[in-house]
Length: 344
Image (tube, rainbow, N blue to C red):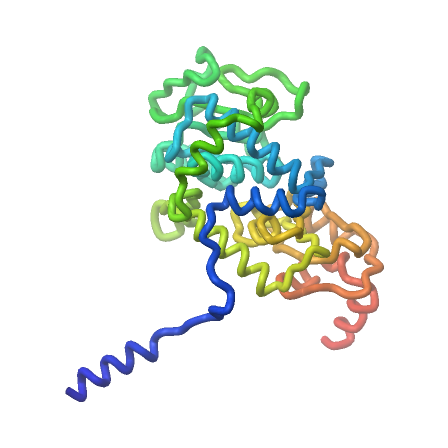
């Protein structure tokens, strides 16, 4: 009896609860973002500094719908997996919102992967399409795909049949419209986007049948103790994680969130879905996020090194709840850095 009572007590004491004053969001990501676009259409939602692109909530929502329509035109259907193999860019964000609206599952493929690793990831989850940037530094993404699928040389875009990648049908490369050579067997992202229609009725028809517990995203573990494992996340996972991170950070409509970290990190979502805040996206994948007010002097570094080289910002204060300025020392006012140096 005492043993049973003691066991019950240990079980009760092992439980912990956070705040419950704000209910969980039970919408899908697509529905929630649609509402944000309706309530704050003219506020900035995304700034991709290295691409010189800027989207309001209304523009980002419209472009995501247009892309969703184009993806449906590739023959993709609810539950199909679509890989994204890229560093930070506007196309990455558009892909997540587009796939979420029509029930596709976006598969985050680590941009540091080499040939064997990307082959494993694509085949493990059965990607039917992959969107990739052409190259970055020493990584030739298109070259690695051609090595895995030499059939691309003679394939019609959208009709790939590769022995080593049996599920992969569509390969789309992220381009600058009108620039670069055509790639055999592949479709340009700009061309794909141009095929879409933001008013496509199929989008709303599919969205109405989605549940917030449907899969939306697959992220692979690092694989340090074996092969990488694919962790499946739902609308409910990502939406509430992002929202409550925003709550903890006390985000307001005056906040811009700079994300040099990879798009797959949870922090990227808090600014994308937090009401009326917006994100500035540098291109580095190595640094942590820093937060600053939209009313401060704009400072949108391409990467951590560029930020360290810039002149001290004339900021009245610095929000450091997410990352201290040891990551981005150039983003702290000179007086703040001087006080920090004296305290060491």
